[in-house]
Image (tube, rainbow, N blue to C red; front, side, top):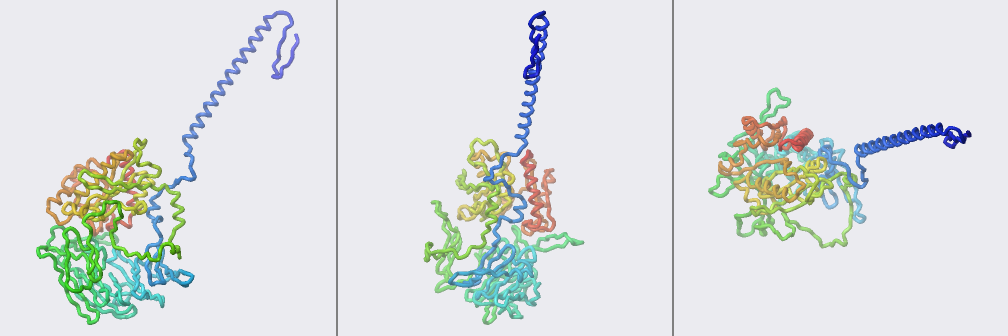
Length: 636
């Protein structure tokens, strides 16, 4: 028998003779071992392959998806909304004269001055060092000769309650306080420059004063009959909030010789107590004149005209239609009349614009244009005689390049506009914010999205605008961060669409405008399947009523039947010092809900006013948590 070694180190046995049985058994034994070895190797390889597959699958599932560097990934946060970082840092512009421009920034005020007309060289003058001694001014008014600037500083929550004014001399770069004593802490409510000089009128302690020069130490008092309930030259809550939209109620004539001002007498008007709790051992009570529906005692008003040259004061009673017992002054304007005075009082509109001599009068068109052309809501005079081809850029400022670049990183919603024809013949206007990357036109969507309706629907308001995304960044937050679809609807009662759309609200507040919102939303749910009809919510709603019968109010009185609130999730937030919508309304509603055993969420913000400006972090966080709970399975 000879043996030889193989390259695998296994001995091959060759029998040249003798008993063949032994060789056969040995071959059989070796073959069995080799078969078992290969079977084990294959099994091990299969186990390893399965383990590798499981590991790869786990990595694929748990790892974040690949990020496209060109696609925005960042979502708008509540911090972004409340920090106002997406707003321009230029708040207002006002020309002082042809060579100086006053620019009010978020953090201060600067003057842009033309140094060289030939080279059009401009230089900045920083006023922050001077102005920040008194805090950031809220507004700036320029005198007719542009030498003096009046700065207004807020102290209270409303400009008509507590404020101070200071005059800045651009030549001497000094300040002078406004007020009878010029102490700097006097509660001066209104200041109005004479359009023909450096003199001005102001209101202190509800009396009108006149100052012939900013540097004059003494002021002339025009009225002396004021009290807490008699106001001269300044609006009360009703006129500031609902009618004039400003606290100023005095008007200089164009030649600067006469001053007209409104007097409001609230002595017979019932007062609403507004409680203030914080930092008082006993609550402090403020009394607010507030005429309510069917109240017989409204504010008494009259106009007075003061002659600057001879100091005479003439009282003018405001007369209305004889059979009307309710008179309101909506505006006052000086005009020069030549010849016969003609009063035009159309039944379906009102005088909107007129020239200084009242010769030219513009009345609103009865019906808005519907041929696709632009509709303008005011008059504008634009001089284009120079031609655009000769125009050139002189100076570029106010551009926030860092913000423009940063916006590319955000998942901003897309904006869509549409008009919806309702069964009642009304065409409502709609604006929709759709989450980033979502197609509104998808007919068979794999995912449906919650819907928020930003509701206001007050008379003359407008929600559907072409401004950037939305005036309320909270709406943009919902679309960007929470993937909600946000809808804005302008139906009957909305502004800038003519009297035909506005008139139906008269005597029907809280009815027709809500009907249009609901009908429009139903049509949107039909047209756009990506909208989840089971998850629709209204982020804000407020009802209005006018001088109508009691039955009209009962139609919109939710306290009459609160049983439907059993079927929805409901949250209510209110400031206890709200002087617009008094807490009494919430108290009555809460009582009706509790008597019916309706479960709801209530947050009362102590001493906060109507806009809840001091509690936004808490309020917004609470709203987000509430909506998450609703849209994740709870009823809504």
